Amino acid sequence: MKKILVAVAAVALMLQACGTKEEKTVSGLLRSDFQTVINETDSIDLWVLKNASGAEVAITNFGGRIVSVMVPDKNGVLQDVVLGYDSISGYLNNPGDFGATIGRYANRINKGLLVLDGDTIQLPQNNFGHCLHGGPEGWQYKVFKQVRQPDPTTLEMTLVSPEGEMNFPGTVTTTVRFTLTENNAIDIQFAATTDKKTVINMCNHSYFNLSGNPVNAITDHMLYVNASSFTPVDSTFMTTGAIDSVAGTPMDFTTAREIGAEINNYDYEQLKNGNGYDHNWVLDTANDITQLAARLVSPESGISLEVYTNEPGIQVYTGNFLDGTQIGKKGIVYQQRAAVCLETQHYPDSPNKPEWPSVVLEPGQTYNSRVIYQFGIEK
Image (cartoon, rainbow, N blue to C red; front, top):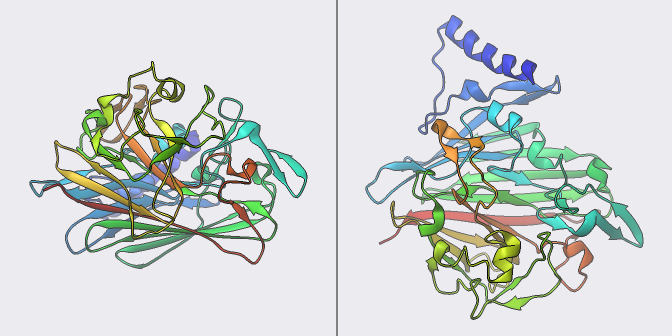
């Protein structure tokens, strides 16, 4: 890790010696702070998307991560609405999912056991005995080596995951395409192919705080989820296999209300099991990306976020395990509930639930998943 930090520092010193003006994002990030080489050959960098209205998204190819998102608040002031770090060293030295592209399998697989065509495959058990987000070396910790930016608002990056990585079968090639639209939406399209039958479930894992100030908890954010049911979990955060109605429970966000209204109601078993909200909602959108899946609003900034997806589920995670040990951008300490994640995906443990929408990918097929994060102003 010392070599990595030296490499980052060396880039900055070289730029100073050459008198070269450092590239700096609107959010204050220095590109040189993200330029380094790991594993001797894997180059990491930072790319910036900008639209005509002044919105900006910064992305690194380490884990296909969104590092910052600058959008205007109700007063027209640009605010950074996602959590992350000021330099690549933060991501390298603090394993986590801030802004990441998650794969091969977003969410949990029960006891890490995957059965395909009668063969049982043991995956890593990196979270309460289960396989979470592809294991301890999932795609959020890989360098997407092929990166292309065809225009100022589009970025495309590709990763090849070899056969047997984290014990998953098949060599998988995945491409993630980020587009910043002129109306301040981030359109993320995931695609993947395989040479052998496998499972794929991808998502973006951005941590949102629409106030623009993650010192403030997101418990005052107003949340709407277009879902009349959810998949309950046990005390190890694993889905029980049931699909329950949200009606009359703290899981009901079919009418927008404060995230914090009942988040600490641990008399309700699901909130106790999840340490807050960390559940998959079964969307009522029928995989129709034109239908609103979720909506989040910060009363403080007036910034709104609408979520659209072709996925059947959305995992709402309220930063329950942020504990003050992560020091993020601008030196801000990330405390519990400093952000909320809205991860569009298939249901957890779907490989072991044949009655649920399939996550199996066969050779000759192309996996396609899409999420649109549409930012606006609450009027």
